[in-house]
Every structure is written in C-alpha cells, then in structure tokens.
Length: 625
Ligand code: AMP
Ligand code: MG
Image (cartoon, rainbow, N blue to C red):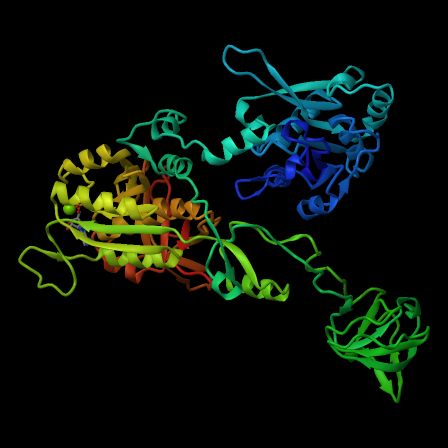
C-alpha cells in the first residue's frame, strides 16, 4: 500500500489522569515533548500526521497539524479520538497510535497495511507475545479503513467505549510484532522520569552478533562487520544551539521547520507583463494596455482591469487579479500598448506560487543533516538566526609500534615515520570531529593500557592504528579485552583484514574503540568503510557514501569471496564517458597509490575478474557539497 493512502493520527485527547491530569504527550522526554517521538517515528510511514487533542491546542499545533478535538463530548476515551480522526481523514486509511508510545515500530504501517490487504480487512491492529505469556493486544495501534466511520459513531452513540468493542461489526485482523518494548507506553510521571534517566539499554556485542547467521570472526564479510558496528554504536545525545554560520558542517539535531512561506507571495518567474489569463486568446492576437510597473521587492500597487496588464520583473509580486506572465520577448510594444501573438502563453504560465518552495510549518531541513553551503543559504532565506546541532564528537587517536618515529625526529635504522596519525587527522577533520592526538605509543603493555584508559576517559571514540594484525603482540588483545567488550576480526577484504572493534571503559567513562590495521592504505580503507559510518552515526548524522558506477578502463584481477578496495583514477575515456583506471601498485603499504587516486573502486564479495569495459562501483574522494 502506498504510504500516501494512509493518514497518521496521534491520539492525545485523554485526561492524563494517571499522570496527574497533565497533557501527557506534551511532557518532556529525552529532550522533546513525548509525543514528538511518536510523531517522528510515524511520519516516515504515512502521507501526513494529524493529532487528536482536547486541550492546549496551540502547543499541539507546534508539533503537528491539523489538530482535531473530539466530536463526542466528555473525554470519551481513545475511541472518540479515533472518531474525530476518521471524520477529518482525507485518505482511504487511517493509522492511529497513542501519543505516549515513543518507541513505536518503524514498520508499523507497512505490516498492518500488508495484513489488511492480504485479508481484505477493515482494520488491523498489533499484538505482541512474550515468552510464556498470553498474547497482548494493542488495539490503540490500528490501521482503519476510513469508510468504517459510521460503524464507530454508532457504537459511541450507544455508549460503547472499549477500544476493541466495535470490532465485532468489522473484519479486523491481528498482526503479531516481536518487540513488545516497541509498544511500551508511559502512563505515570514516575515511569517517565525512570525512563528519562536510564539511557536506552545498549546491546552487548554478543547480543548484536547473535542476530547474524554463520558468524565467524575469522572470516567476516565486510557487510556483516558494517552491520554489527552499525547496531552496536550509540548516538551521543547532546545538543547545542549555535549561530547560523557556526552551524556550517555540523549535524542538525532537530528538524528545522519553516516559519514562513517561501516565496512569501505569488510572483513572476520572468521579466515581462503580468496579465489576466482570461484575456488570453489562442486563436487571435491580444492587445493590452500597460498601466504600471512592478519591480522585485515592490508590493504591487496597481490592479489591472480586463484588457490591462502590468510591466513586471522576475520576482515581482503578482498584481491582484493577474495569474499569468508573458515574457517580454514574446510581445511587440507600441507606446503603452503591447500585442501578444495568438497562443503566446497559456493562462497560469510563468507565475510562481506563494509557498511553492516551502510551506510555513513544513520541515525545511531534517535532523541528521550535515549542513552544507546551500543549507546555510536556505536557513538564511527563512530568517533563522540559530539552529540546534549535535555537539561535536570527541575522538582520540594514536599510533602503535616501536618502529615508528614522529616527524621531526631522526629516522633511525629500520624505522619509518608515523604517517597514520596524519591521514587519520585529516579524515577526522573532514568529519568535523574534535580530535585528541595522543601520539605514538610504544609496543609496551603498560603504556598501551594507560593510553587507552586516558583516551577512554576523554573521548567518545578511540582510533588506534597498528598492533591488531596476527603478527602483532598478543597483549593488545588482552588489554583491549580486559578494558571492555572488544572483538577481533579478520575481515574478508583487501586491504585491511584485521580489525578490533568494541567499547572499553575506564573510571566510569566508556568509548567506542576502532583498532585499525597499521598499514598506511589499510588504515585509510578501514577508516572509510567501518569507522566513518560509525562516527557519523554517533554524531546523529545521516550521510551515506555516494556510490557511482563507471566503466573500467582496464582488466582487474579479483578473487571472489572478499571485498577489494582498489585505488582508482576517474577521468573521461576516449569517447567522453567516465572511465576508471586503477593506480599502479595496489600494495597496502603504498600510500602514494592513495594520494594519486581520486576514487576508490569497490569490487564486491561475489565479483570475480573484471574485464576492460565492464562497469564497476566507485566512490569518489571529492564531491561538490
Ligand atoms: P602492524 O599492524 O602494527 O603489524 O603494522 C603493519 C605495518 O604497518 C608495519 O609495516 C608498520 O611499520 C606499518 N605501520 C604501522 N603503523 C604505522 C604508522 N602509524 N605509520 C606508518 N606505518 C605504520
Ligand atoms: Mg605494529
């Protein structure tokens, strides 16, 4: 079922008697009114969301519109709210949820809709069943055919109040959901405060891993590793209010709702003449008298009568009565008269409507967006001086290895300069993190432990390089494992097979840990394909890697069964089409290949050898943002 066929309804019309008669859905919970959690989870599932409320209508209108009060008087319970919703429902289906269900399932609409379609039913509602318990129906979470309103009204008129009391007149089906917690509702202020203080429970790695079939830490496909990481990391919930320019590159913490219509008035899309569509003729030329001029920024003062028009500039406010603009190059002018050839334009042409770009009250930018230059401009065009952004993520990083020398030190026999701290610095800067550079750590257990502890106490995430490969000393594993929940993988990929991942704690503080391999290319590849997404997720950001396809300029050898990341140069081929060639040596220590490349060629697990001319997936390093 298309989601546009469903209107969402937040049931918020109750007295809140168990909460001391407060308007339950408006109580703050995790940084916003409780009902906003339900609205945000429902909105992506339906065409639009409306609210049933009987008090504080102004406050409700801030959260969603429209807001409808009960038609059946006397706080008659959720069914009266459902009735109000159905009366005003303009779509064939209505999906009701209570305002105090901040964890409602994200696939609620999809699954209820599938059930009504499969059973040709009038109504579907959720049930859950916990092990050894009786099934628990949740009739307030229901998808109802809007045309069944008369049945409900009749039931209410007869004094019926039970949420499922009217089902016997309908074809109603139950839909089983596995996660009972998703339907948890919050009835008392104590419950609210209790939940407020306990952060949502974080899963352990073992719990996350148990959802994967055939999990093998020594041969883990890239996509499984990415999935485990995605499910394990938790967003850092801290919001700050910053001035518009300071929001550049930051992550929006809340939706930005447009306070105004953009454009504010109907206006002209062309330099030309504003006229009445009724004056146009398709079969003969039309001559009109020009009675004045409107510039962009000037309110239209003149009101043309039939047979008259107004000279107008692009962006000029449409004069009253005018609905069309003829571009100036279409007309011939003599004195104050213009003549349009027959059928020069159609009524309504070249007019921009008020609110065409954005309607007042609609979201202009969504929470999770990384603010780009265009977004700054958009926010300015709405007159918004400051926005709520996520606080910057603090990331500590260090390199490990006795052979490493920091730049500036003499390069002793057999040593290499530490380059990973510089690539990691650059990649973290680009993500907009606050960084804590902890230098080079010698291969010494007690130094490593101290450094990890200190990193953990000061940062949200820790990135290390080196010391996780098979050849590396075992104490890394022991220390990391002792400090928390860390797992060591061999990933089916090249370069970058070894990876340590998890969460460590020290003195009551915890941080997510990414133990990247030491090889200079491997460290970058592992960062881009594992750490990057996880860090963005911690920042509350929504920024998927852009995946493109291009023709391969040459043959590439590739073994099926692992993902290969080859460094590529994307350019135009002889025929002008995009073509990618891999850079010379692809060895995992050869940083020059990374520096020369402008994209990464991603060869997936199942793929084998690539022939010249085959299409391959690429990820460009730079993008116009
Ligand atoms: P490891 O993972 O510690 O066994 O290191 C693998 C390879 O990467 C070795 O050749 C290291 O010398 C090299 N390597 C490790 N860390 C760095 C670093 N920070 N900068 C440059 N090369 C490194
Ligand atoms: Mg090492």
